[in-house]
Image (tube, rainbow, N blue to C red; front, top):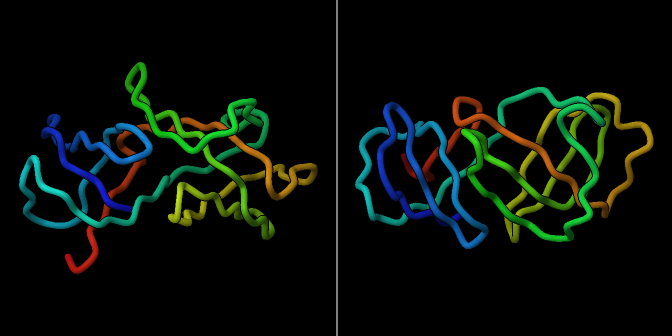
Length: 125
């Protein structure tokens, strides 16, 4: 995912993408604000269907930072046991979700991720 670093926020980084804005931990050494980076984004939380990940009536792929949390809208492209594969544009992200028995591929979901559990790792770091 291509991001631009906007500012350093305590021990985290505010970033922007073509999908919106967020705040995350940076796992990649030194960085420069206002520079662009190709990164992998991870949401390092356990999700429970119907509790902290839900169907979305917004059929979009988006990240926004609201009330101290990253709000993520995405499409499910695969489900395997307790792992859901979501899509943000051309980016594929795996998240752990429990209780997904009645969830189907192709639906759109919404979930929150705290900045502490949202991890950016630059390629070639």
